[in-house]
Image (tube, rainbow, N blue to C red):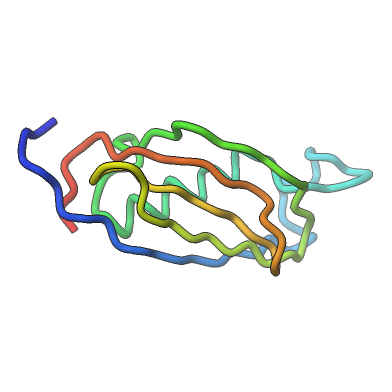
Length: 113
C-alpha cells in the first residue's frame, strides 16, 4: 500500500434488479426465493471497484448487516457514503425506502480514480 494519501472518495450509486427467472433463485430458495447475501455484497464490491478504478480483490468488507430479505423483481439501490478516513466507505442497499443491508468497506490498494 502506498504512503501517499489517496483522493477523497465520492458518492456513487447503482441499481440492480434480478428477475424471477434468474438462475440464482433456483437454489436459493425454490419455495421462497431471496437474493443471497453474498450476491448483494458482490454488487457492492464490484461497483465500488469500477467507480474507484481498483480491483475487486483490493476492497474489503469490514462490516455488513442484513436487515431484510430481497426477493425477485425488487430494484436494489446502492449508495456509498464517506466513511472514516480516506479509504473507508459506508454502503447502504435499499429497496424503495427500506434499507435491506448496510455496512462498511475499505479500499486496500491505491485509488486511481
